[in-house]
Image 1: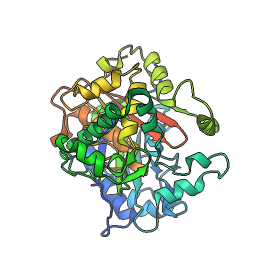
Image 2: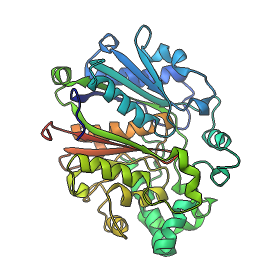
Image 3: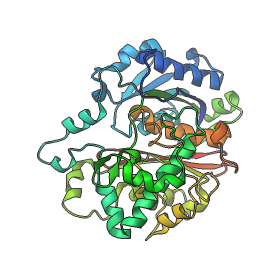
Image 4: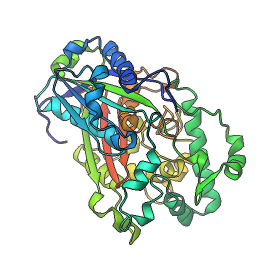
Length: 397
């Protein structure tokens, strides 16, 4: 793996409930709820925090430099602070930045805050659609609502098998979310409803239906990172950040509509990350994967790339229930992004949920098996991928 100056552990985790509206809170108040939860989890006070990393999609909320206002809730007054916005990957970038700040020796304890609260003035779809270049990105004007993943799967595996795979994935995510009290969408779906849902859910674009798509959620997620010495002293069960990688195709994203790309950002990130950590069989190595899955179609399609699979291996895993909580590779025991999507917090929540699984503290959606090696991902609209590896022990060194 890449050499780090210091090992870094996650010692505090705090999340709000994710929902469509939070009328009883403004943005600083909502953030403060997650901050207090993380500090309590780590048995720390705000005075123990050396630096704060803050991130959201401010473009969607129409609030310029929101970190200045949010000082009321973050506790950042008088402390060093970094503001980060990298689109859908914001939450994962927060994890990478916080890890780097501690590993570098600049700070011993760093708090990362990801959030989104669009209720007052924001619209995700409007923000994405209007920020795209009208010429080069004219095929991308639907924003996050893409029919291409469905078309890709159907063209390769046929309509019936593909549609059933996407709907099975979505119902599996809903069943996982039903056990997670923080999840936004918990419909109580059953596999017997598959045909009905495929026929009756409102269409968005192409084969993408409303039931397949992620929500627009409000909520906040906070992680506290510490250097090895302090992590061991503070926490009885730190979760170690082994490695992370970011790969994007931002400068050539429009080319993806002109010709087939040789390697997706997901596969490239996975290939490089696993290779430098000596992982030859990721399906065997990892115990859980918290994947950033904006829709059921994307979730199905991306499993193949993240685990470097070929052909229909990913569909067989889904069809054989190997991606369920009791399967070979549990995907999103939390319910994933289709169940809660507080954009600036979405990707950091993936790392938070993976860390909870490693600690054994996920509650009702805790996996029955011992979770020692966890993977989480983030994704942004310009084909930007972040992968994060978390470990229970330091035995990889």
